[in-house]
Image (cartoon, rainbow over all chains, first blue to last red):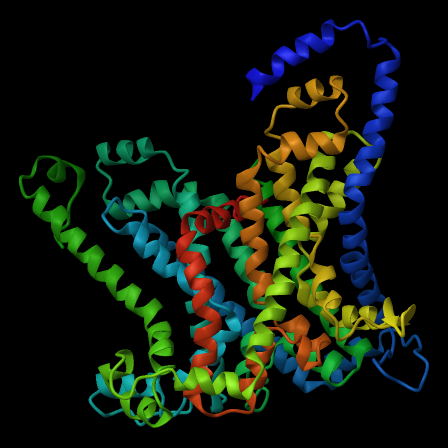
Amino acid sequence: MTATISPDTRAASAAPKPVSGREPRHERRSQRRAGWAMAAPAVLLLLAFLIVPVILGFVLSFTNARLVSPQPTTFTGLDNFVRAFTADPTFLRSLVNTFCFAAVVVPVQAGFGLLLAILVNQKIRGAVAFRVIFFIPVVTSIVVVSILWKFMYQPDGLINSFIDSITFGAWQGTAWLNNPSTALIAIIVLSIWQAVGFHMLIWLSGLQTIPEELYEAARIDGAGTWQQFRNVTWPCLRPTRVFVLITITIAALGLFVQIDVMTQGGPVDSTSTLVYDAVRMGYHQQQIGYGSALSLVFFVLVLIVALLQRFLTRDKD
Amino acid sequence: MPVHNGYTVRRDPGERGLRRRRRTWSYLVLIGLAVFFLFPLVFMVVSSLKPDGQILSDVGGWRAFLPVGDIGLHNYAEVFDRVPVGRFLLNSVIVTVVIVVAGLLVNSMAGFAISRLRWTGRGVVLSVIIATLIVPFETIAVPMVYWVSQLPTLLFQNGRIEYDFGWLDSYQVQIIPFIANGFSIFLFTQYFSTIPTALDEAARIDGASWFTIYRKIVVPLSGPAFATVAILTFLPAWNQYLWPSMVVQDEKLRPVMVGMQYFFQDNTAWGEVMAYTSMITLPVLVVFLAFQRAFVSSVAASGIKE
């Protein structure tokens, strides 16, 4: 490429044409115009479908707006937030469920993903094939995954009959998703099953940046497998670790599809989540103002997590 | 497993035996995990071939994972009979293709402008784009429904162009909000800044416009960036669920994922439901297996973002 261009360059600069001095200003104006013109489509679209909705969501949170309403929308101050935190047990339950879900999923999925990454990072035959297999659920739609697992969780479904056969018939079978004490756990299992392959890959790309010499040095010093992990792998994975934890946390706080497909928040709100509740109120019940307020609560949580990431990655430098 | 430390491992003639035993363990664990990740999908595809009665009677044993007994495509035929699944597939293909193709164009042009041109506001635009990366779609879904229901739209009616308000129930509402993507712009910006600017200068002297430089120099050199962005935007576009379930009521415009949820809600024939899920999963899996290397490196690239 360079080879074919450079002769032209020389020929062009040798040409007597350019008038030096006027060229830069003309060039600057052309860059300014081209820059704006080429960035404009993306900037306008982001403005219209991201920035405006963010601002609109913020404004609507302080109103009683409805999707279709005979009454005009009025400003209601903090009413929506007061209602959410003092008079809406479903919302409070959703908040607790969301935190429970995240509290289990974040460490388990991160740890499991790291374990998978270490396993497929070994220099053994077939490692790539296993990597592909573990990633397959990630490319499967979460809607499909939710329906499939709902089928497996049926009282006479695959999961119960499997437990039944490994316990030699001692297991009575349970309706996992209809029981308030097991429904959220059942959803946690399939969520991890679906998403862990993604984080395996992120961990893997972190592992592959660790220079082999560090391990050699550790082995010469007599470090065993665990000590190598403890003293080489773990400290070297710090940036990856922050990224993995943050992305899982944000995704876990946004739990929606599994709930919508499998349980609709039930039984007795035991699986309702923040985003599910926001969509239920804002869309199904058409209380756009209230739904926006609940979305804003979610957004604030995400912002806190993102700021935490900033803080954690900054002190490294 | 025997405890080993560096000294014994290095000299011990049993080192090879130890390594081999360790390798055997690794394989056992890996195979167990492979079973864990694959069994639901095998079960799904196998069940889609069986009549309902047999699915339930097979569930207690290995037969649940084997295509045995009364096998056939009757469940698939039934799905096509009951719902316009061909139409749903077409809708999803249209939406996905337009989002990916238009997204490649719009986001790469923005990436070009940011990485290679000097213009007022460039820094502000870049930092706003980076800031948008932390906004999950779920936070704006509810206000966005309100917003798109107010947007003006052009219609062709009785041979005249008229305008109306409300984007609900259309293709555009499923496509246009997802074309521009901060993360895609970010990836393009990063990639383009690795291409030497000497090429641009040479082409400028030859009188090339900036758009020509983008099209003739930068785009042809950026295959990997385009592949990464295409893959990373293809999956969420194909899998869209929350948004179309809110803004598309018309069955003629419904994408596959939403169509599947409706089908699932008023249908307890599991064989047919499994046929539907298999039908929309297998093409994606085939694409993934064919391009797995590109998929894997795209996802790895998404982890580099800071």
